[in-house]
Every structure is written in C-alpha cells, then in structure tokens.
Image (cartoon, rainbow, N blue to C red; front, side, top):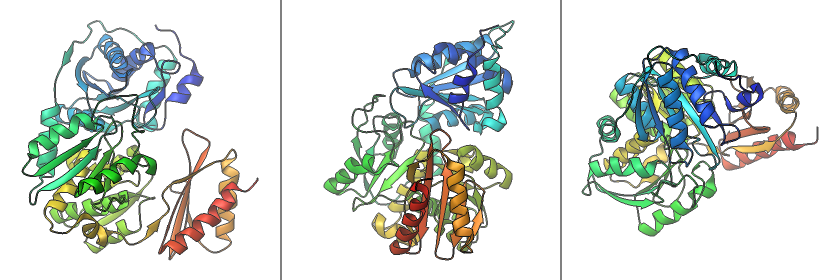
Length: 457
C-alpha cells in the first residue's frame, strides 16, 4: 500500500478530462507511478501505450508511469516522443488504452497526462478519471503477482501513412509554411510532408526544434500574438498557406495567403463539406461556440448538425452516440470518425491542403463561402463571483426577450447575434464569445456584455 496523497493537490490537478499541474510540486515521478497503477486497475488494461512530448520532465514522468502500470500487471508499449494524435493513433491501431504525457500549450513548468481507453475512447471525470484520482488518493497500489513487460515501438511512419490515407493531397503544388512552436509538430510534420514529396508541397519550417522551454513563443496558436511570426513569414515567402500547431500538435490553425488568421469555425465548415461529400446525409458535431455558419452549411449540404458542449470528452461522446462523421470546436480541435473519433491537428491540416490543391483559387477566396458572420474571439475576464455575474447577465437579457439556454455556461441569442459566457474549469475567469451579423452588431453586444461582466458587484 502506497502513502495516501493530499486530496487538495489531486483535486487541483485532476481536471475535467485530463491531469495537469506544475512539476515537481504538483506532479512528480512518484505520482506518475501511482497514476500508472491506478489507470491499469480502473480500465482493466492488459497492455498500455505510453507517449510523451518534448518537455524536459516528460521522459521521466512517462517512464515512471510505465513502471507503475507494469507493476500493476500490464504490458507497456513505449512509443517515445509523440504528438497527442500520434498516441491516439497507437491506441486505435493497436487496440490498447493509452497515456500521453503533455501539458499541451501550457508553459514549460507544467506537465500532465491525457488518458484514453482502447481505440482512443476518451476518459473524463465522469468516465474513469475520478476513479483513478480516488484510487491514487487512497494510496491503493497493490503489485500484481506477475508484473508486465515494457517494450518500445516506433509508430511515426504508420501514423503518417494513415493520415494521408484519410486525406490524400493531390493537385497543384503548394508552398506551405508550418510553425511548430518548438512543439511536437516539429517531429510529425516532416514525417507527413516527406511522404507528400517536394513535387506536391514545398515545406517552409519554423521553430521545428523540439524544445519544451518554448524559446520563440508560446505554443498556443489560439492567442493572436503567437501567430504573428507565421503571418509575416507566409507573406514574405509568398506561400499558399500557413499552419500553426500547439505544443502537442493536436490543434491546428490556418493563416491564408494574405497573412490573415482563419477562424477554426471556417475550417470546421470546410472539413464538414468534404466529409459530407464522402457520406451525404451524415451527422456533424459542432460545439456551441462555433459559428452559426457551421450548422447552416451542414444543413444546406444535406447533413445533420448536432450541437455539443465544449470539451473533447463531450464531443467524442456525442459523436459515439450519433455516429457522426466529423466534429469541430472553436478552439482548433477537429475530430474524425475514421480516426477513432479522436482529434488530430495534422489530419485537419491535410484536409485544408487537399481542398486547396484541388482548387485553382487562393485560400482566402476558397474559404469565403464558409465565412458568413463576425466573431469576437474569446475574451477573458477575471471574476471572483462568477455565479452572481452570470445571473445578472441572464436577467438583463431575459428581460429583453432573448433566447437563453444553459447547455454549457450561458448562451443568449437573437436573430442577428448570439453570445456565450462560460466559467473556466481551472481559473477565476469568465470566457465570452460573441458573434454578430456584422462587425457593428458584434462589437455592440460584446461591449454591452463586457460592461456587465466587469462592473463592480
């Protein structure tokens, strides 16, 4: 029996759908070892696949987790340095539960674990993560009578080949700038683009050196400041498109040939149109913060649009329930039924490149038909009494006769605008997203709601 863990620390690091905290004060090798054992017992795993990102602490944490899993009786397959979608590929292709050591876009002092069942089925707080946390908290760590074996396996080439089988890129030659942000796309992008060949793609790499201290900029492309280098390089190179990945490369953002950032909702609509062309009438999932253009276009193309809460466990769960072919989120996560319903930034990027290569139009023109509204992007405000502020906003707009729902936070809508306000899972923040028929409408609603959020309570 291991020593019981501090419940406060475990409550802090076990999030809605992953484990995340600072190293070594919140997450260390001992804790990773305990989580490995608890994971094996909770999911009843006979074999576990483990990958890790380029953070300095990741190899040791992944190794400790593997020790705990093996001590609990499971064989462990170490795939080494990997993107998160590469771990999902290994889990799906090999049919084993998986653990990915990464803190995605968080600063260097952070690390964490994304866990999944066999075939990349998500594990969230309601589907096993709370049980793992509670087992660790209780110090439950019995050794198996026969420990598992630990082996290594390289899946990078198979991963790249599988993605290209799902979204082959054929047509005109493209010049593509890729900003890996010193994250795992520095490993996966060359593996994928080398298979496409120089006759199909001229790759211009940026920040491909794997460096978990992120010396150039944060590996978080949802923040506009982290796209500036890529935008400038696309214009300077006269490139057709720019791709930006986050630290663990499960998210992808586009920059068009003019250097303008492309909304993830626009990419969601583009990919949805491609998937619906393959399977007319299929279901497409979108979270409630994606543009109204997404469900409109899905319906116009004969598909069925289904709205979901924000978060990968909710998207994947809804995809499983509905048999959806594809799902997209405003945060740059894109989910594919043919990729075990898992998210893959690289597969989303390949869909964009395939559509562009098949067209003789520049990306900005190609995407024009998928852009119908003006969005604010996510605006964060520090708020201590989040419940009181949400109640005040709801009352103000209910009195005006607006449509209100609570699928995820507070969503308020009229014919020519909508907004959503959600509390952060990890910080004292309220997150506001607004969309309007035009810039004037969006700006007016954004400013009105921010005044309510930021007014003294």
